Length: 405
Image (cartoon, rainbow, N blue to C red; front, side, top):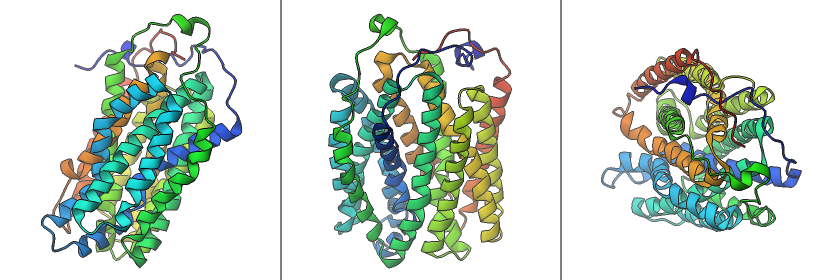
């Protein structure tokens, strides 16, 4: 049974206490950290066909190569709760520092791995790192921002992450045209963030005002709905980096052009999120997310029937418009439901949902080689149903409970 609207919708009109914004360097550091999440997959996505050809003699190579992209999600889904506990107990900065070191080590291991098993082990280490960076950085955003400022920054964060994808997809494609191993070297860039992260606040700052005695429990029924929406969205979203390169290859795209096309999708999402940042917090997030799911459904329906790359571009732009609305709204919605003392753990749950969806995408939505377009038909159907449900549900009464800052 769907919980009533009064338990799901945040109070979009309630006033929230304000807090001085962090300095520009701190904000820039958090934005750079957000790019590491999409970098975990975007970097090697254009190299998947070449990697599959290289390991063609290995048993189950076709499936294992796709899992090398998505196993990161399974590891995050399992380990993110522990990252959340550590971030709440020891602070955000220590978790971020250790995670960055693991990110560079695990990500770049593909440069020297001699087997698919070795590639997968490196991806497991990368997953542990992403769980830490995503969870601790997300909790830090909720520590440092409140009210409308939080919504605006979350939209900017989503935009920056997508801009990272717009750059990394084409760059990965160019490197993949040279060697399937070359994109793995980009993960070493994470080490450059260590000095910036060192100057971040430790996190879990002293609570002010009424927060000091806050013993509010999370609204788990509403939070679970947000988690479920994030999981479903990622299953649908990840069709593009997992199945998209193979579909585009069937339509005649080279690895370099595939990277540019994937970048178009990410760039459209980035621009949409950035433009929406100005209006963040003014609309019911259920309604905006429903619109986003609907646009993704239209994009994937067009993708499934694309006779050539020109139609693919139009499909990616439509889906990118939708993606730029869904994620910032889900994170803003979640932040409004989370008491301060639970930020690390609730954010970790969101990380688990997001990356479990990433891992499940090629398992739940899969098709035989040469028929990748079928997966986009199924993705369009699911996105359309979810979007319609959110729009219908958003007609319900908005909660009278105030925001949690």
